[in-house]
Image 1 (spheres, helix red, strand yellow):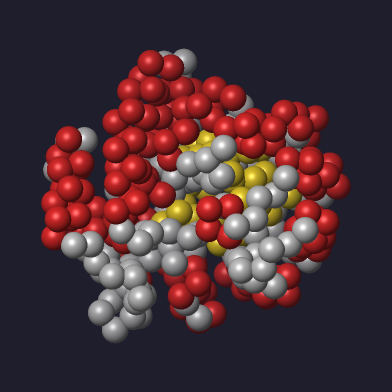
Image 2 (spheres, rainbow, N blue to C red; image 1 turned 60 degrees about the horizontal axis):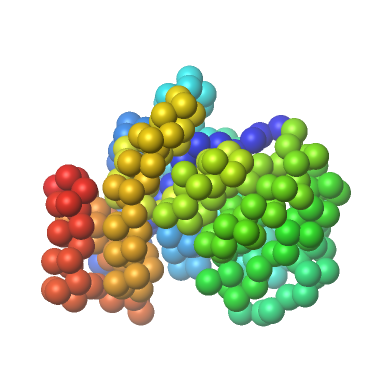
Length: 305
């Protein structure tokens, strides 16, 4: 069974001015990230504006990412992990996307966000993920992001799902609450053979690794892939001080993402590095000149430009 690990960036989706996906830029971005040390790629997370594409664009982009890194391996000699975002407001919507991912082939797992807008009970969340897991041949990584969805998957619910659903292989926790993340880890210790916790808050990766996370899904790895990969690689090498230094180096960039509507700062950071990926789709607007200058200074201080 697939086990998520390492640094997996939720890859930005490059858009042209007409709103279409720039597949060539997406392929280049995928190679750039892998060549700078990440251990996997995750198209169509929240950073990838998953909500903005139709099924045809979704499939084409998944194929593009898969093919761009098909022959590449990570630092540990393993093939690059591929997670496909399959998020929708309904159970049947997720299952439909899961079937598309299965048709594309080559993906290790699905990442499934809690449903947006509606406020589910814990029993509804349990049934949601259990039903999805029973209707796909792919492993499932739960995606908990209460700041965006206004719902938190309780640690007790995660423990039930880890116990009852062997093809649910873990959870990405973007709550920013270390107690919540720690409880996910503590309550699923008996299922570590098939269930791992991935940190989803970029400022807490080293903390998560110390506590028992197997890696991180980190949006800022789009802009600073080598820095974020160092957080994990140095930790694995036993260099906790080096991991912390990389974490401290990254922190100002993650904090800076609050300047604009997410993920515009990520895209404009790439533009400042000379990697053209376009802006986010409307209604998200570009940063102001003052905000862009602040971001430029953050990148200078990080020695990225």
